Length: 273
Ligand code: ATR
Image (cartoon, rainbow, N blue to C red; front, top):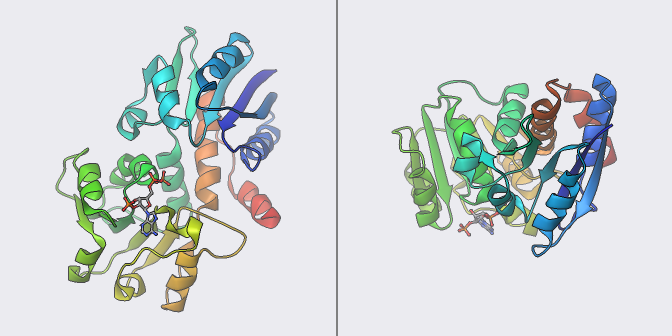
């Protein structure tokens, strides 16, 4: 039986074991998938001892270890290099370890599933932290007319956009959004504001005029950002539960070469929130 696990701190709340066990059952793959608590001090030692077992084929990595994981692996995918972070480690056939990130592919998979985006869209990405950085390359692969990164700290948005110089990737501060006279097809909230029940301070009209609103975070009730969007008349919106399952599906595919069905898994998780 091949072994997998997810590292994090905290980790008790992680839904990854459940998701991967559902994927395994669905695709008839014989795997074990556990959770592992670590500390910044012992994370790399813990990886070494996990992978000392030849049956250990890969792991997921969540906060706060994604950057450390990027240093531990032998090789980084182009996405992981750009994100500066690894959420998936793969033991390769030559015995070396590849670090990849599936957060970007995960959100894009979910946006396409929801019909929330298509080629040539105008996309507004709120936030310029790790979550935004992880999604950037994959969102650009959708060939948007514009991907505008807006952040409370404008300089961080500018720094992020400078990582991939291309004319359809731009940056601004929240205050500059009043000057946007064309509506956005999609707004993605990647800020951690939701976690503290806060709203990123962007103009109501920008939200009201948008085609779709997506929040990377999720909970049993609509997030404050989605509630706010709904109160402004937005009818198409989603939280990030499908992104969570999407990134897991991409990891599963990297390890097993099989694509699991996400819909039933999203529904099962939703019912248990
Ligand atoms: P993550 O890995 O979740 O992206 P992060 O790297 O700490 O976390 O980034 C948090 C993001 O949320 C940043 O873009 C931050 O804005 P600043 O760069 O200005 O700090 C944004 N953020 C956090 N709290 C916010 C709030 N109350 N309003 C608006 N933006 C907020």
